[in-house]
Image 1 (spheres, rainbow, N blue to C red):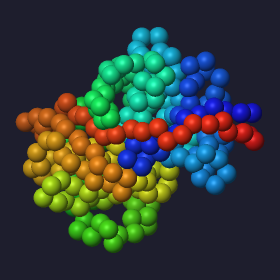
Image 2: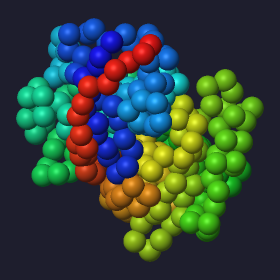
Image 3: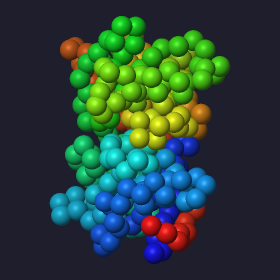
Image 4: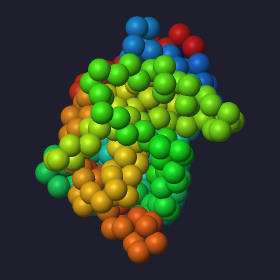
Length: 258
């Protein structure tokens, strides 16, 4: 079996993109998803994204983690928007459906602005925070981000009893006068990724809780993003936009042994 694909990345968060408007991709085959994401045996990516037709909106995006689970992916959504424009499905504005419902977005030059759903208050977890930005995120403020090995503490929090059974993503944040710096352990990938869109959004909203003003500038290992928002009197968040580049890396055909 051969599969045509495009490879996209958004600040180092990379995805195998598949034009599935004819709905022939065997999405129930989790072994296939894992194979495509495998960086040694397959294409290599943090996730697989299908673009399908939608009866009411511009398109449907389905995102798979490497383990075959589905979730909202902020950087993946931005890459899907850029891919949909390349396919001629959209122009510079769009309304589309993904895992957590319908979103709108717009493209401005090389920057894709993805509109997330409103978010309630961030909840304190001792000295940490928890906030759901379409995917669940635990946020920990640290002072030694570059020196940290985030894998062990990230895995411990991700699999802790508090977050059973589904687990959570885990973000480590260092504040700076210019903004914040973020590293993320991603659930489903089960490793650190160079960037996580819903994760940096969660971290920016936590920064908003400690009096950072919108827009918040975020530095990840994979590049720079911004998150803008409106904080309500009830300390919830509206008008949330994740903005950053989304770039095509290459395209090809992969021989699938599964």
